[in-house]
Amino acid sequence: LYSGMSTYTVAPDGAVLIGRLITTYQKNSAGAADTAWLDSSTVFTASYARWLFDSLWSAKFPRVKYSTDERTSAPGVLTLSAVRSELTAIYQLLIDGGHCENMAAFQAALIVQQNGSDPTRIDAVVPLFFTNPIHVVAVQFQIEL
Image 1 (tube, helix red, strand yellow):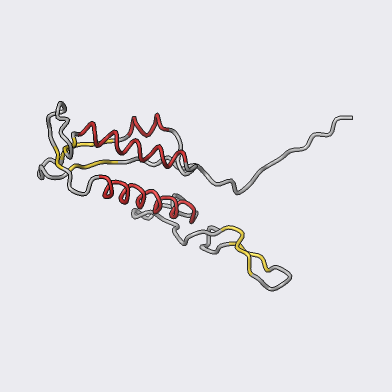
Image 2: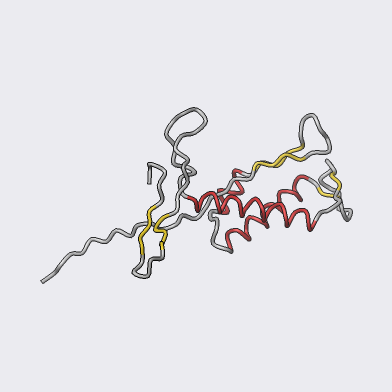
């Protein structure tokens, strides 16, 4: 797996069955060994999360405005706390779907702020705490007589 080769077996009928699908990612941009993106499931989950946030946000807020006044409650106008709430609601959908976990850590790490040089832009750092696939179940049997 760490040589960039997914595992596979060949069934009796000749069909090739993938055992574990991985990427060829080996090192980060600094050249250090890194397994963060080795499993293809990480790539697929990250891609799905990005798609979900983007599609739900653009469907719900096609022409939204932004107010720095947190007391604003006009239709079609969002505040930073409203953006934070919407991002949290979308993350909850990822949890409900079994893709992510740890809402408390998400809320603690979520950053939502107005861009310093562009007042029409909101910058958000959305942490993703993925659930992990189970590749190995290690069992130790103990015989009691």
